[in-house]
Image: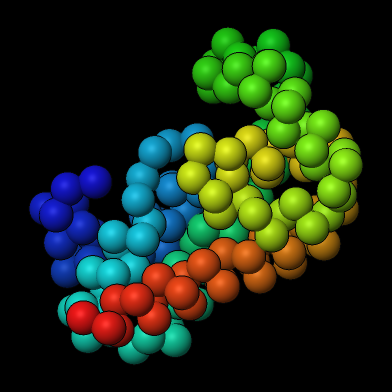
Length: 151
């Protein structure tokens, strides 16, 4: 994501831009939420507000992916969303093995969306999934904010 997009989203849209960018980055739309978080911190937004808004947006986006898994058929995921069945099946088997704690890792690049979709496919409890997703994403943003504060 370019610096111009980050600048626009934060200066023109403020915290809503941060929420929206973090929301999109947790769906199958590629978007770098860490850049937005760092930009918001460097622009002087309150650290805890930024972490909370980013976490809420990213968790909401992750739950959209969860819902996608809950509602869609395998064929639709491949055809309309370009989610390959073999990759999703590997992640699904890991989620079956590890259960709800897998939601703590829904922030991971490349596989986080698949973890959320797999949890939806398995019809896991959405409230517990959302809570664990929130915790994992919160810790990630807390670490990112800590790194940004070093500069």
